[in-house]
Image (cartoon, rainbow, N blue to C red; front, side):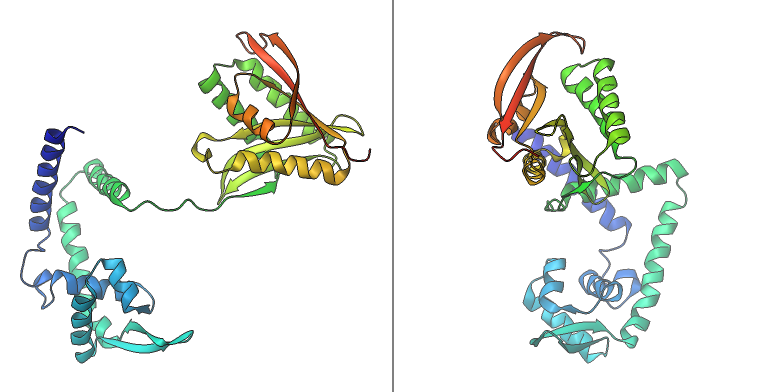
Length: 313
């Protein structure tokens, strides 16, 4: 790391802090011409905009020393701004809420703060206001502590999913492997056939999803009473490393066993290293290789087979 560059960047951050704190008036003895300090106003704001909260959680949220926060809350309680009640799930823990008096006291300063910021933004052109607010959003995102990724799950396909599978395959394989339009056409043909001929008793499509965001896909389709084919395994780049690929392959294998297939085959290309590792880990064995140029450049196609050793369907 270049320490000289870092020092200069730190200087610029400090200069911005000095400018902005002066601009919004937080250096005044009483914030917004109130009898409250900046910290006291922040405590009032959190209580006004949240539900009943334990002092420990409030202190952690604001990054305040427990003793300092305790003194602030004691003063607020004496003035009738807050009340305390025992938590229903733990009698040892008390929850703090803002009283009606506290809300009446805070309300004019809330309105004054809104008006102050509106006055600061109003002279700016619309595009400059948006640029300023967007920059603030970006600062918040960059400096926020990292969050654990939201949980994902696998589900059966729904209307619109197959179109997404075709689109993502076409885009990603063009970007990452320079596959041409023939590959997207092949995926579209597979997707269309799946929708037309889908037999839920022995075929499945799984979609990996987080919230409303699709993260991956895989298909298991019938080739014969004994053999199924694994097709169109995909994990979006933003979701790689979360174990989704393994979960998709495992779902295919488990379903194939459940419905009585004796083996699963798949066809892939040697260049798809991550997928090949997943197949090997699941027990698939490479049985055939052949060169082709179906997708614009010479590729080594591979056929893999997993023997399930179950009874024939």
